[in-house]
Structures are given as structure tokens and as C-alpha cells.
Image (tube, rainbow, N blue to C red; front, side, top):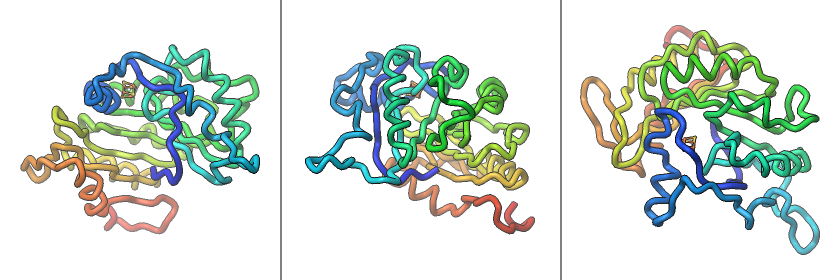
Length: 252
Ligand code: SF4
């Protein structure tokens, strides 16, 4: 999943929830600035970012902007329940822009949507993280039953081989896989990544290899990949797959 636009973090900080959170990058980056990421705070200065205007009264962010929304927290965090209604209003006002949300708290979704949500806002994509089989088996059956117009699955940090195929219905637009970054990163095996890719090809769902992570195991060898090379190396693998194109068995 590639987002061409801005970051919008109406609140910052989070509570760790599952194995994928163990080395959360928000905690890691905050600790480098002697901040505590477990303190969840409204970002007052950027809360209204998508509807901010210039002196001519025009939106600063043009039509078509894609916002990575709430990437320094979790959109469905309980502590943000009081702030979220205003965020939905902003998202609705900017129906000419797109908003991408990734969550580990999809089980809270129905408590958190606005009254006029219906079968979903056209301009919102909500993706769910499935870092291991346990979380895939818990979150994805819930997810598949929810009224969301654009859905995707994020297997990052990928912590083990995952059988995703039962969840790769025609509703799923994309799957993204990647390893973990940071000093304490857990290993990610390339064959786990390839397995997800293969399942996506079988289900004709787009697949993207986002980053290798800091510790990549390939052909039985451990590679330590520096942070600045992790995205580049994944891209160089050339294994992304776009659904709805003609493909052959050679893709597998
Ligand atoms: S849900 Fe996301 S932001 Fe929150 S602790 Fe886990 S990894 Fe970090």
C-alpha cells in the first residue's frame, strides 16, 4: 500500500496490545526524544490539518491528497473515543481526499463509527494488522463482516508463517508484508513473505513487500539490513503483485 500525500496524526501515543506491538516504532522514536509513548495526547496543533486553509480561504491540502491517518497511534483506541467524532466530521468534509487507517483494534469498529457511516465512506480505507496466525484468526473474521468500502491486510511485522488464504476474499484489495525494524527486531524469514505472496496470487489479491526488516533470513542465512536499506532491498526483490492482471503459473 503506497500513500501519496500527508501524515495526519490527530492524536499521538498508544497502548501495546499484541505481539506486533512489542517493538512499536512509536515507542522507539519517542524514547529517543525522552518522551513516553504510553501517554496518549490530542495533537491540538494538527488536529484539523486536512481542513486547514490558506489566506485565500482555500484548503491547504489539494483535492486528491491521501492522508496516512493516525500512524502514531491506533485510530480505534479507547482513549480517543471523545476525539474521534470530530475526526469523522473532518474526513467527511474532505470527501475529495483519501484517508488510510491501519488498526489492531478492529474489534472496536462498530462502537466507533458515525451515525451516517452506512456501508462505509467512499474516501476511507481501513486496513487490519495480522502479524501472526493468532491475530489473523481473531481479527480477520471480524473484519470481513464489517461495512468498510476499502479493505487491506498488513502482515507487518511478520512474525511467523501465516495461512491467510481463507481470508483473502474479493473484498480484500491488498496485502502488505514486511519485517520488523529497530535494534531488537525479530527475524523475518523470506519464505514467510513468499508464502503470503503465493497465497495472494492464488486469490488474485494485490501483494506488496514493504520492507525487509532489520533481520532477514533468506536461504538459511541471516542478513542484518540497515534501516535505510530495508525498503530498498524489499523493492529490489521485485515480488510485488498486482491483481486483476493476466498472470501465469510462473508468477508462483
Ligand atoms: S497498536 Fe500500533 S501504535 Fe499502538 S502500540 Fe501497537 S504497534 Fe504501536
